[in-house]
Length: 494
Image 1 (spheres, rainbow, N blue to C red):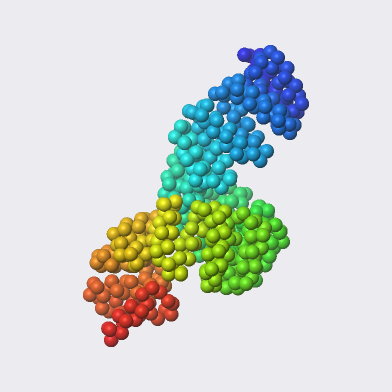
Image 2: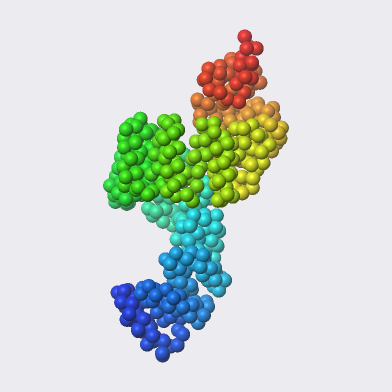
């Protein structure tokens, strides 16, 4: 064993120096003394991989696995090599074989989860990361990626639970603090997010991501100039990133500096001529100015650049909805769903289309379908609650859904408004008043909320406040569900 260790160290030395010929030769020599030794075969496979001899590399990995089926290293090396060869399906099979052969190991679950995450298969990645932690709660490298995935899925509390497990043991770990800053931003605690990301910038002053994430939080907190300052710093540190200048263009537009916004977007298109995202960005900017022909042109160009990406389809469908081309919107959603029958944004868009066409029964069934696939979709809960209450008379179910939607996003005024109106319909005027006050604080310019709380005040016997809010709703000049009732009620109060 002592002599074998010496030979293995020599092989690894050659491998580190990328002298693959000597690595293979030394391995072949060692195999004469230690036939089918899995460690030697594993190193020899890496040598063949370095020489780009894929067939021999895979064959050696397989020999190592066959020689010792509970030896993890060749499974991981082989799967990683298959990924490099652009054979992800075979890599998945290899990781799965490792999980079966070594059921107590956390590592294959982690790497399989990472592969799924890279492929965008987040629903498959999450359980693999969870399995890694189930088998080894101390497997910390799975925690932050898992937290990130939960955040992307909108499961903010789960994301925070995971990252806090790291922060407890490593309170100054920049990567964990960066994740926490993103989570606080998702919870709309922008001040807390900025404060946390200040620490990340202090720890990592030369890291573009720290500045970029803080810039996003500044932007949402309404401090556009500070956001732009951070974006500028991040872009200088990483000039080849696409998302940083894209965020800058949006910030310039928000600031009212439209020339800089379009100039930045144009620079991105020149620098990344084949990037469909550059055309998505330009289309988004034109949409902000209601220049629908130019927006459509850019979205169509994005579609040509990346026909398989749903982003351009979703934006085109939304544009068609906005411009009252409902048949085109339906056609576009159908095209998306043929490619991916369970794409959440497309399913939601189709439900909104049914509502727009006043096909309420179809809308109800579509929202129910969304929730069967994505039970945490707060927007679907809210919209279905509204339809149950307004069209179906299913007030108890509507209240349950509206409460759950508000729990998912307690700061969303629209969800609170739906819940308050359902409470009103159920005759719980005191609760409705409190809920709608909170909604009005979060969204003070929404006429429908003024209408709803005005009706509540009338039921509570406060005629003056009721009349004031109804007048506020009607004079807004915006159309909303219930405007005729608001006008009728006001006319009866004269």
